[in-house]
Structures are given as C-alpha cells and as structure tokens.
Amino acid sequence: MLLYPDMYLDSIDNLNIKVLREMGFEALILDIDNTIIEWNIRVPDDRSRRIIKEAMAVGMKVCLISNGTRNRVSEFAAALDVSCVYNAGKPRKSPYRRALKLLGVSPDKVVAIGDQVFTDILGGNRLGFYTILVRPISTKETKWTCFIRRFERIVLNKYNKNVKKSD
Ligand SMILES: [Mg+2]
Image 1 (cartoon, rainbow, N blue to C red):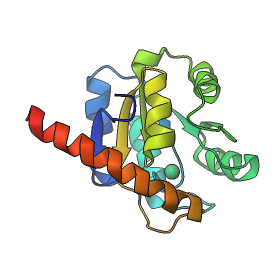
Image 2: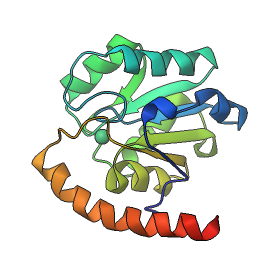
Image 3: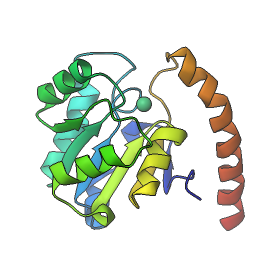
C-alpha cells in the first residue's frame, strides 16, 4: 500500500538514526515543516540541529526536501549545511530523483521521513524508499493541510487496524 509508512513514530524525538544506519541505510531525505521543526520557523532550532548532527555522526547523508519556497528551504538547509530540494511538489517523483542525485545513493539505501501521508509517505514509497511517518511537531498548519488531515486520518485508521492484525 503506497500510502502506508514502513514505520510510525509518535515523535521525531524517538527517531533512532543509529539503528537505521545499522539496518544498512545510507541517507535520510527529510521533510522540514512540522517534521524536524515547527511549521514556518525560518531558523533551525536545537531539535533540527541535533537530528542533523546525529545523522552526520553515524555517516548518514542528508537532503531536505520541501514544497516550500526557494528562500525558505535553501536558507534553512544552508544553516544546517545540508543539501536540499525546494518547490518539490511532493509526491511527484522528479524532486526525489533530484535528491537521489544530490546524495549519490540508490533508492534502497534511503529513509524518507515526513509528517504527511499524501506528500511525504506517498512520494517516498513511489521511489521505493523506507518511509517513516512522524506525528507533526505542532498543530499550527496551513488551512489546506488541516483539510488534508481529515483524509489522512481515514488512511491512518486503516493502517492502525492492519498493524494490529499483523501483531
Ligand atoms: Mg511537513
């Protein structure tokens, strides 16, 4: 199912990058808004810095991928010293291919992490990445995202039932 993540985390703070590295993954493709920082915060905070630092420490490459504007995304990525793809239009495939090129890794070595099913998870799954859905950091979101969340809840309810069945 292309809308189901391979893993769900209640908080990005529960992400164990070291374990992902031990599983053989070589790169992280990270959404920005509400995944590693609150929506629309322009400057990296402690949490986002820690995530990137942890990734670097275990030799994981990082690329930020966002539907946000060039200014917002490239400023943020530059402050963290990582590569990025802006105006991505997730879940389209082309921005992810661009990220793969920037990272220089094959799709099976990538973990894609994001807070939205219809962009981050669908997009990542389409490329064959290992996908992780995280609970959004903040409830502050655009009106459009709030609208989309209703449909997301339908998918996640089904996903949770399936997870319980396979336990
Ligand atoms: Mg997001």
